[in-house]
Image (cartoon, rainbow, N blue to C red; front, side):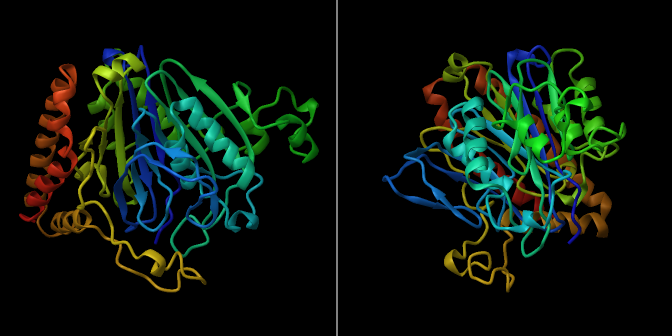
Length: 423
């Protein structure tokens, strides 16, 4: 399987957005043909001393966790992106730094594990930053990031809620975080935080100096330059292209869900990597806690590759939330090749039903492009109508509205599958 270079994560805050909301988006670019599932996990409480099995290692379980909806590679515990019931969204990126080494393959926490921990345990964006960084410092990051492969990397994150966003960038166990309170921001496969950051790992400058990575004569401490001299060199990188698109679409101050979807589907910029973009997410977050009580967050997921030929389907947390079974991959439990040691000695079927249906559409694009494009056009019209309907529901939301949206994601998956039967 080909290894993509990275993903792209975006966030837009007022005054760039309409209705004083925050809009989050991510394309998850993974090895071609890897299955990404969308799952829901309810909130839970745990006894003291309970352990949690992540992708490779165990960590201490929290006393309680928040409900989460996640888009994740089917083989791992962690997630590429997702949201929790408190209105926090997180997306991660692969980054390569001067201190990447063979040691990165030692089994620790994957960046995707850190992301899921941040969602399960963080009640707002800042709390999620603290969860991720504390686990990074305690357990470290490492391990193979593809199923059965030796691809590894460090991670950066955008962590957002309805009030603010944080960009968190790491190099091994070194890290910095920048608070974003307005406008637009994006990350890709390079370090972007330079001299301005609001939080950092303990004694960052001193430790970087001891490691021979920085000296005072270099000038002000610049995280990107210290850990990756080439990270800001390219003016035509996907990071730069993403920045241009965000500014273009948000210039009139009405940036919304549909605009974020257009960015994630953009081919010319490289943001959309076709079948290498294994899943996509767009989330609409009310601007503050009081608004969230009236109008909940809405999270849109594809659960299928290639956002340009995929349908974004809405999910809203509520008393009877769920995603159904169509985007959930087979569970092999203790017999999963990831769990059985030595790991990854066999391969198993990981495709979920929606993924299989989407494969039919991809095949039809080769065999009968005109027919396939008609199906895609119908899906896009359905999506556009759904966005409008959701906007109307959210404007007039009350307790009775939860019944209308509790099974909406599953309902849209069923409609999508019906379209694929025509393929």
